[in-house]
Amino acid sequence: MAHNEAVDVVLVGAGIMSATLAVLLKELDPAIKLEVVELMDSGAAESSNPWNNAGTGHAGLCELNYTPQAADGTVDIKKAVHINTQFEVSKQFWSYLTKKGTFGSCKSFISPVPHLSFVQGDGGVSFLKSRFNVLSKHHAFSDMEYTEDKAKMAEWMPLMMPGRSPDEVLAATRVMNGTDVNFGALTNQLLKHLTSAPDAQVKYCKRVTGLKRNGSGWTVSIKDVNSGNTREVDAKFVFLGAGGAALPLLQASGIEESKGFGGFPISGQWLRCDNPEVVKHHQAKVYSQAAVGSPPMSVPHLDTRVVDGNKSLLFGPYAGFTTKFLKHGSFMDLPLSVRAGNIGPMLAVAKNNMDLTKYLVSEVMQSMEQRLESLRRFYPEAKAEDWRLEVAGQRVQIIKKDPKKGGVLQFGTELVAAKDGSLAALLGASPGASVTVSIMLELIEKCFPNKASGEWAAKLAEIFPAREKVLETDAALYRKINAHNNVALELVEASNETESYA
Image 1 (cartoon, rainbow, N blue to C red):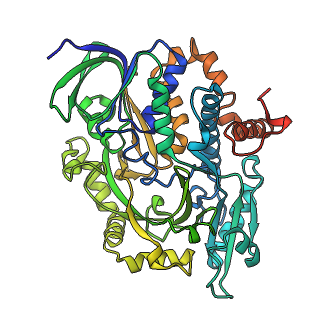
Image 2 (cartoon, rainbow, N blue to C red; image 1 turned 90 degrees about the horizontal axis):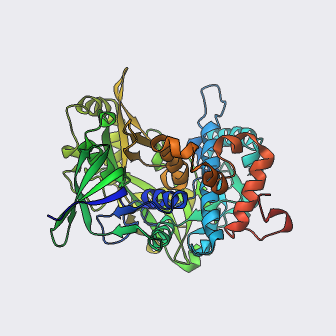
Image 3 (tube, rainbow, N blue to C red; image 1 turned 45 degrees about the vertical axis):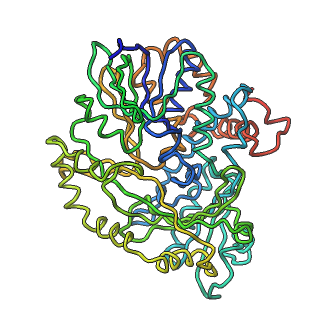
């Protein structure tokens, strides 16, 4: 075996998380030496692939599960506001890169698409009205429109209204400045931009087979999946951003902070339509309410997707269960992740989530006709021949220790870092990609605290004129940043007032 190579940073996985962190680190320190290691033969091959995720550009505009309703009828908007401002932070980074001129076109990965929420029945209408009344008072949602008028709904979502009973009780909200993001295209654009810089490499068809402490850093064992050759790289910092594969690698690191974490894999499927005669009648992302007992990630939605310049419609997701942690993974992933430290929380979650398990099994067993029935709640005149089933990416939800319940299943994302800041992993799923930049900024502040507040501070302030907390409370600044981002990303036409932050 050759003498160990040395780099500053090894990033495992060539998805949106690693690509974002690598480019951000290179902006903050152009002299940093880093390597991205990817198991597949291209970037964005798993959850970042546009057909493997909802790709909404999650901004809390239409996702009803981000605004839970309490028993007394009040609607909590904190999570929606936070996700909205996190998405604005992502847009600041993409705007900054686009303005550099060497990054490429933003049109390849982000498109303007209205975001709608759609509800049925008296209970749904009451909830949506309450949600609108609270949300529309916040500056991030002041452009939201509400209607119970079916003629208006026919204008907003012309595909979805024909064929309905005239006495059906319906309501909808709309925000015109939503987006569709192709995170696969964005990831590959980031990786291309990264490798145009010195001392930055992306290596494909490489599997990380070992992680061991080496002084204040790590020795990473890497195997070429084609030749079988292995090499070892010494790194000062390691990031595990490999989607579902991050958990086994985190466990392999042996860091104290990894103890007690388990994974609950959930697969997904979509119905996809490419018929241009159907697609042209639906220019929106329309979200509704999840069925009782179903997980938050299964909220049904009918989405316009823009991939490589072509429009399609996606409906779903239909959840499912498999023991794989990656779409291209092994059925042994789940059993091999069981450890003495996490078997308690995993068994507690299994016992306390029998309804969820039954739901996932029932979803897997559905026929195509049953799936079309769900679609027809949205699009009553849907024809079977226009739709085909697509298998989505794997999501590995987090299982954590809990003092009361033994273990809890957590929907969301979690950054796990070694206390010395030498290694970090990202676990979990939605809203994932849309808030990547905020999560990677949190990682930088956690793992590189002295540099973040010292030599990198001026550059961070240049790239990010306003972070989430300020955007949540300062309406004038929010509007200025939002307007600037929308012009820089070519989501709206430029006007004299919106050309700069100044």
